[in-house]
Length: 233
Ligand SMILES: Nc1ncnc2c1ncn2[C@@H]1O[C@H](COP(=O)(O)OP(=O)(O)OP(=O)(O)O)[C@@H](O)[C@H]1O
Image (cartoon, rainbow, N blue to C red; front, side, top):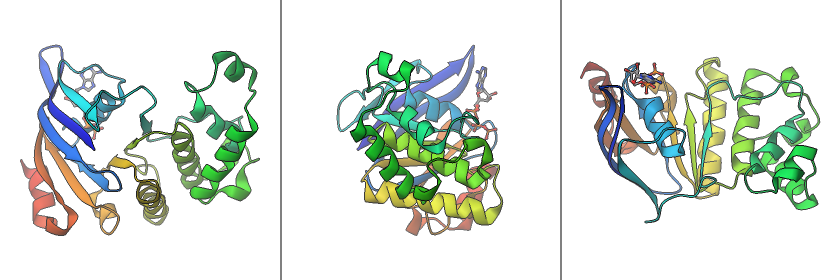
């Protein structure tokens, strides 16, 4: 379980997130919603360790997470166009393999097998050799998810991973995310600009308004009015 308690992050004097408390169960995909500036990215970056919170705690199953325990997928995938899909996924093992091996691009047979399996999990097994720069937006995002899985995280976070995609492609990427979170029993937390896309894939909703949690409920208890209230606050 990912447990967040009393999390606060300020930029200068301005609080970006404050008094954040929640628990997320593995196997569930939680959709993080809130207006622009509500603090979604800041929260995800604090969970991933890219930002240091001013106060509060983040725990995975009761202990402080290791750097590789929590993976974050970015909006544009943050991929290098010239690399193949397979090479990109292999990069996800950075931090788990010796630095010299990463620098030389040497990977063990086991890592390569695992990377192919992760491409398979996101529906791209046949695209391992393709240049990332030649892939569609949805395929790139799925490579980004496979790379995050290669990190062997216990929690998979994504910051607006489908913002640049058309609705049908966005939906299929979210369905893949939900599937890998469920199959691998990961904690899943994904921020979305369009909450409508979450219907049917979200197990839980977490809503932020002005840096505070104003919605934390299973999807079965959340209707359009509760979602709208997060944006009205
Ligand atoms: N590096 C930074 N320096 C100063 N202020 C920041 C920084 N990053 C975020 N903020 C501020 O913190 C608040 C929360 O921003 P954040 O990016 O977390 O919101 P968000 O919900 O992700 O917004 P969006 O949906 O537009 O991406 C905003 O007021 C923002 O201006």
